[in-house]
Image (tube, rainbow, N blue to C red; front, top):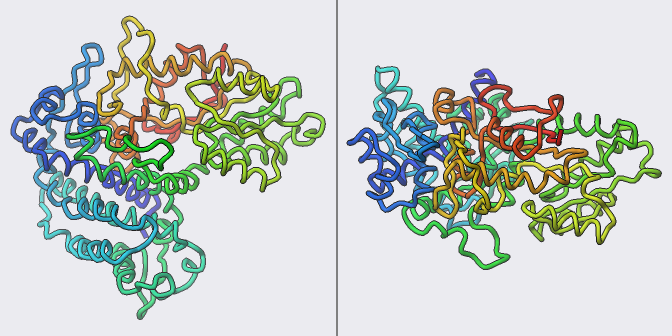
Length: 535
């Protein structure tokens, strides 16, 4: 068996493929890659003009390819000039991009079928592609090390497009239950259309995840590794609805995923899948948050928050988890009768509020579950005070992966002389957002919260980007490319850890040193945990 670091690298490279294949193929079909192969370098504005593209999403796409080492980003935030130049790896990769045609076609085809079922037509196409993949698409591998690396990179992208959505469907349908993991099984035990399902198991056998014994299958150690980490694919795969519309987003109507009736389900993401993937992927980080919660609620009672506000409470699971940690592991938990804990779950989404209420009632936990907008803490504070006699300043404010998902607002004031240090590519409905503007927007967003979090702090888990050159130098060690693409094409604003801290400081909020963590704990950090407080 390969070691765990090598297996993790495979997952990261699969995630790269899930976003890079549709992105590169969309640019290939419009002729953008041919233009770059011919001219070697082009400014963003030249490409926008030549291909009648939406500047914001084209910039996201080109930065994604930079993170894969195929282009080099040249960004000057002082003059707001952006250019991209072809790298040696890009010159090898771009002529191979047509190989993505099959998996991109399959991705689009699957959108016409049930999102949770293995249906015959897409899986027959899947099986044909899997067969071509098993024969390396007929690529004669080069003797040249760099050429071979790029050839293998593209094939692993194709592998990611085949196995990523499949793993997620299997996981959400119970295939990773210990009934299957602990013993041999036949395809018909899991799926009625067992002949097509057998083809899936055969590809996984080819990858070394299963052993075939007679007509039955059993997990290998490698297979168990991937099965246990199936949710790691969930968040990226949940954005496939966005990637099905890349041609339109980049070169057509940038509002295609946003023009929907009010209250209709989101078009850009499979939210149920997203929540499933998030739940599995985030457990490591919650252990760190537990430490912070325990320390806070072990302090003398007069130094403790009166309760917790979970902004963006989702299904209420995190609020329930925090209550149980306080109840079972802290001094406050011993005196909840005398000093009750005010728990508030707030969310913009009415469906989320309904689910949260039901889950907390089922868990026998008292909490106020109310509508709230992360961009309007003043309304939330007024609602809490007038209707529940709760002062927002007396609560610990908590949120997970929410600040980057704020609705874009043009900054009311621009900071004179601001030169952003971010390398990010940001867009709103196709329009490119200048990085200095994004920092000012983040500043105004955090300033709205400063009056309410000075006393007990804002406990925020946040997602970040890293420079594309750093991602390209560390392929297989980071999910940065996947995060940049899923969030860039859906109008979300992830900045580097250092940029987040710098702007928070401008808003008068500083990370408490003992509570700050980043994952991984290096320059490749794409997730941070911060307890932001005023001085």
